[in-house]
Length: 288
Image (cartoon, rainbow, N blue to C red; front, side, top):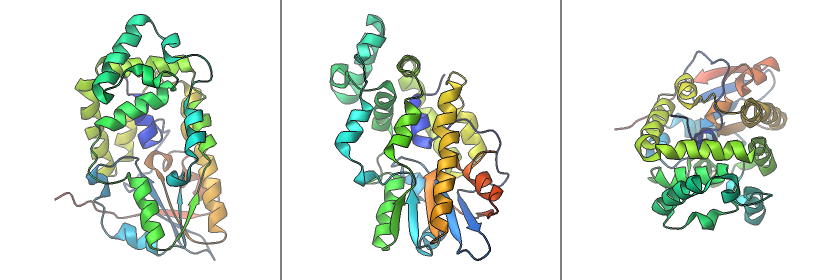
């Protein structure tokens, strides 16, 4: 089964050239005459299992001057975001056959109780993501990345965005509407039978901090190369640069999609190339 577009969105990447040997979501970043900072790999879900890390994560967060995240979610201009989520030309049905549109409509009705006509102008990537999110556990009141923002505010830390919303939307728009539709439909063909199973495997890989396993599960050779590079690699360079800029002035706990951590052009490697020492910190997950 080809993985749905939403997996890429939730885990923020799917093409990883090589991997750090050590298994960890938490990494210490140090350099002479600089305060120690940290990187932490996150996921955009509310499954209680991904929140079950031990206290060392909060201790390292509290030791820093600031939290840096991909986006400060609750400060995004909602209307501007909605506009970016809509197709610039035509409607969803214009990119599908009648049979394909009917199949999509039947799934959307089951998942949302509404006709797909309610989402007629939405880009396929975002519709796929919304359908996926509806089936995920909602054990916690907010997704993990928003939880870090909320926690940092309670600790009275600065909260800084590493990206603009245009960085993420721009990456998504590198994929043609036709390719987005194709992958959306591929995912729908056996949606109910496999999506839950696939998400379970991905979360299991996450909580065992096995980034290589996450990569294997999320690979999809049908994804256009330029889309993968833009969604992951190009943004790695931007985030690494933003983290370095922050570290010049203050220590930072940078929490972003776990897939951005590793690879020859991952944030860990890019910081090391700039002279930073980056090493894993042992984190345990308590699932009892």
